[in-house]
Length: 352
Image (cartoon, rainbow, N blue to C red):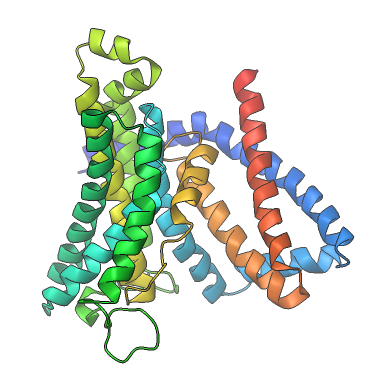
């Protein structure tokens, strides 16, 4: 075990201090620039920037509950972002993580309600597996449309997002709906299938699963033949064929893997946070997964700080809105300016 762990830790250290260090540096510098821009916007709106940012920091890190909420919000972004990063590395523009997350939550809920076992390991494992398979199946539909019918993957993944959201709504209005509930939701997830909380925090254990997935996908991308094939495919499909790879097979495989990761993201959101399947729980998650993948320079390990940044920014921004009265539209502008500044810094670095 020690012989296996040592090279993995050394590789993670090199990645975090190598390519991922660039992402962290760009993230920090651009976040500072965005904070200055946001302070100007807050002042123009008639509020005190110092009070606004104090509320933002307090809302993100001021208590154990706030930190737990930030970690919980970051977890699905991390899982979805890692899958999107792998697709983008292969030159496959998968913007269907939102639908795949919805499918994963639906699959995990259906499995946990249909098979209410008392053993937590079996209950959680079955729900996560069902969620991963549902997400992979949804991504596989887009891959099939792209490979067999020539439909562009952007169009296929985008339109399948809406179908997945409507499918969740249909199931909650039918066989998975809770009788007598005032809005569309499923019955409670059995206790055995709920993810436990991390010791000393309010965050659920899905975070550990997300971190493990990021590390495993980094190894997959940089230390396996499959990962090399994805990188070659992203650089040139003719070169991929010349190197002995089957582009169609790689596209299908990376889409299925990305969908499975997004499906797990939906599963942990239901099993660890909501503990019901609720209508619209995944709205916005897929596009934020794209954001954190780009912020992490498409490196799975660097997606970790990017997802944490976006997750804690959102929890802090909500507190800023409540405490200082900053309009909700300005909160969205704050997040957008930060993301654009990070992307601009990254792009400039890439050209230099």
